[in-house]
Length: 195
Image 1 (cartoon, rainbow, N blue to C red):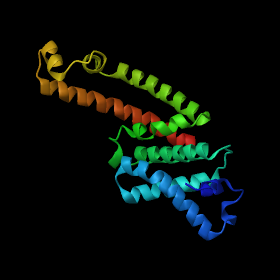
Image 2 (cartoon, rainbow, N blue to C red):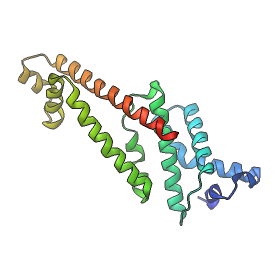
Image 3 (cartoon, rainbow, N blue to C red):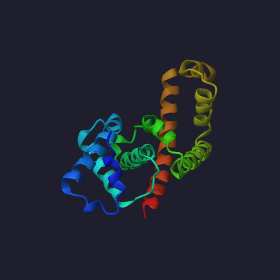
Image 4 (cartoon, rainbow, N blue to C red):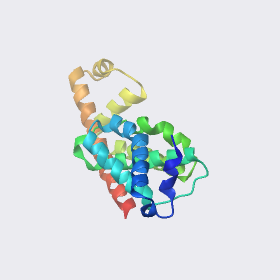
């Protein structure tokens, strides 16, 4: 990959010739397209996210001492834009493994972005614990059996003298309840961060 991406950090991107701007854009596009497409599987949405990410990149210009850190930062910007898109669009709300796609890129960035991500993850974990405490006792018990003790649906059903389908249904409701609380709190926090 060439060093055209370094032109993204130029003093004024608008002063670069139009053909070169296009080359820089398409190099950025090639860098992030695959990861975003893997998550969304929607070409039009991916194009929108890439354009939005590109605008964010050319309007903020941190300093990097090598091209690898720059590329990692570009991927982080596109990852964050993708996650914001997922939070805002109901069509994608059930996609929960977004971080798995980008996790190796996070490890490349030894900067405040990585620290911010760790802090945010810890805060989210604490929020989830708080949400679990707010659930009905029967839901909390099911979650404990399933994820803390690793019991199967059948084992849980036997323990509680009920049917397996009832256990599945209640666990689904418990997860949905936690997800709603999580989106309510973290969606609002995300909007505030942009202001």
